[in-house]
Length: 474
Ligand code: SAH
Image 1 (cartoon, helix red, strand yellow):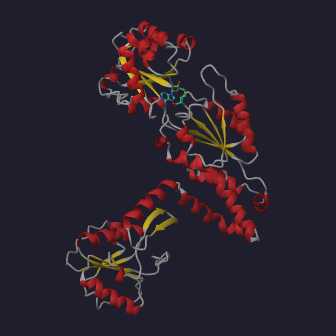
Image 2: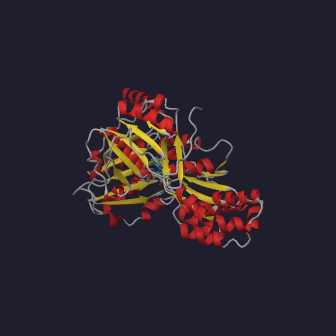
Image 3: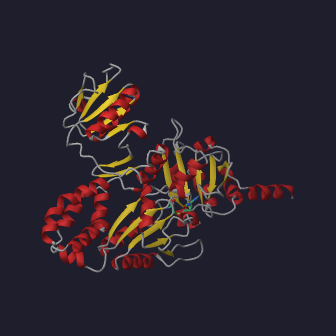
């Protein structure tokens, strides 16, 4: 390591910035955004710095020669686009013992700028010793994705309580455990979810901080997480974080193996899903096991295909968690209907053509009979059917009865967003036949004029193409 990362106190004094052109303006933006007081020497004489009134109060435009200017009280010198003046300034700064950065010139710099992740009080600096700013930026992007957006608020929240709590816990290791429990438990989760007043109340409700810190069991919680339709890259950043933090994951059959791969290696996985025709362990048993795991102090993830609140029984699980008094959170996911629409390029709404969307489920013919088809007569309504493969004939009959034309475009889209996704497009008249063309579910149906806009069904796998060719040759 050649450069030690340290944090400069911008309140201690002004930074002197010397240079010209866009390079100067870019550095000015960086320093201004950080809240620095800045003395600018624009050596090209162009003093138009397009400052906002906010910034202008902290920025002083200097007119004298920077090589002879008074540097008393200055905390650092930055040169950007300053040419020879930058080199001379570096010599001067070094002789005065002042930190100096000359942009893109390691030899004349005594400090360099890292790539910054800025989350309020939490700041991450990434450096590559000046070798490759592009690598530093890539690392920064990865950290940006990993760090919760409200991590700065969490630091600030803790900062607000630190003095009063520390006064009540004398031993240092116990203090540390106290804050670890707060950060890792439901209080930390509330702050990160933007529910600060809830977190505030919970922390104030801790009667004996030492006892809280000593408790041998961590506080468990359950996150209901939407896994999306299959492509692991469609997991939300929050979902990914929850999978990385979980001690145990209860997942549905629908959750793809690629997504299960994103779970931390040492996490217990329990498959609890039902498959068509095969019962799972049952909803009550799932609720019971989740609650027990959370009460024993584990961080539980209930991972569900698509979105937990779209035909996912997430509502029932939340009710069970509420009545058990277990802390929980809900992380939405991309539901299969939206995944399918994107995958096969079917816009679910379209100006003048489709102005409403209905998501419905028709698992068995019996469910399909329970649907009030008369609410689906509007030809400007796109209908997305979940679990509709076996009930396809009943769905067709229902929509016919509602007066929908047999020529209404229909798409059957299976295993959407996965590598083996496939689709079949035709009309409502052919719906049962379209379903037969599909090599297994899960699949959604999209019914409505918008299906006309679908892209090509390019997502056929070579294996399917060959088997289709063989079928056709027979
Ligand atoms: N909560 C899920 C839906 C669960 S119901 C969600 O929001 O997507 C199960 C039904 O979802 C399946 O029968 C099928 O209709 C649909 N489905 C789930 N994943 C799918 C996928 N990858 N491709 C097509 N349909 C899918």
